[in-house]
Image 1 (cartoon, rainbow, N blue to C red):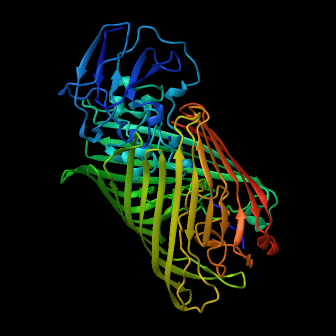
Image 2: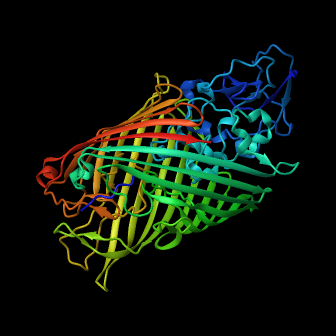
Image 3: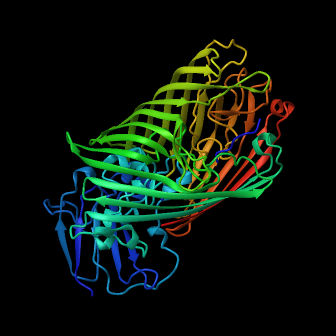
Length: 628
């Protein structure tokens, strides 16, 4: 069976300071370039602990205004040296940034540096905000970042790890979901670093609370599959490429209401290609997102509701990551409500997957064949120090309900049994860091039922998934590497049982992150056990490298090998060992607007797989992102 691949004039200087422990001062010279950038410069002095002691919680307190009301005196000594007269204004940090580091701001310097095309590496966005990288081990910011490089909402501690804890995907300079970005900090012109900032904050009133943010993206992926899907596609080799462009508009109508809309179009081509069926690889211009959001304060919490078409990422990345490989990622239709307190948040939702199969422009439909509903909660354990380093842990509990009108089961003969399924998935995830130890441990149980087509028998479901990564951050080493291990155990079914017996294969139907387990997406998160080393390293300030070598077995020999939750291979090997898949992913943030990457993997199929007809092969992918 064919595998389905689913493949961020001079004046005396004045200084504003926030109290936070830390003896070391980092100076950032922000050059507003002539021609490419406006003239003038700013000096941002960020107080922090030494680089070796910087860990996850620092990312939780970075979205702060430069000039809040002055009410409290700072106790930190001023070690900033300037050539102009300096006046110190002491302030209290807003509640959501309690414990934040000191931020020192000076007015533009008298002399602007030479203009140039390439951004200073210290002024580049964090690489963790690359949408394709969502689901990688959460890279921690080892140096503090100025407000102008983060555009996160008012989510306090849940902005940790580039915003991944808030439930809207990663949010750095840019976000996975562009509506999750908050550019209101551009009210302060000292936060403007880029000529494109003129499009990110367009005010319509004197108060500045009615404004428009425009966004856009062009992305191209190129794929080389030597033996796609263990050779099951019979396309050897396959050269595929796809691209998409999207444009968004985020209109804020005061503090409480905003409207967001996004148009998207995608195409795909190649030589000897495969897998372009459906409407997510080739799609004419249509509304990818269109919703209204209302937000306010209720019971001392920030409460909001969203209605319309939207993206959704509030689930562990090994359950879903928005499916970013195809030209058009998932979008959903329905209702979503959330509430944020200081250390606790909750998100409730009922969504149906957009049907983008119609080929005509603006003909996408609210699909009812696939539904996702439930609730997600997260508790931020009070921050603490361990081994001299700041630490932050999140405890998540959730319920994810899914209904799929088409969800076949594999059969012994290599075919499939047509039917529909309803799954109920409660689970928990504990993740974050304790000093240099970075980890994510999650467990899910899955119940529900499978109903065979044409009034066939109904089968109960009982399945589970355990997913864990554990790394040690060597913060004082060059590149600040994190080296660890990844282990996953996801249950499988038994094709030899009767048609009314319990089915035990875990279902993740909405495409987990390709960067969590398998970049080629030849192996899905069903019926598997995998274990292998994993490492992340930043060779330079604007590059990152992910290395991993998972070895994969079938959890149940009586079940198939899955490419995704609803696609499986016709191979029926006798042994459990499936493959070993060494992988590497390199990303270069060339400028704020240009990101380049290359991913490589070799799939070493096991002897039992090759005896069943499978083949080994290489997978290579290159990526380019142009974003504003």
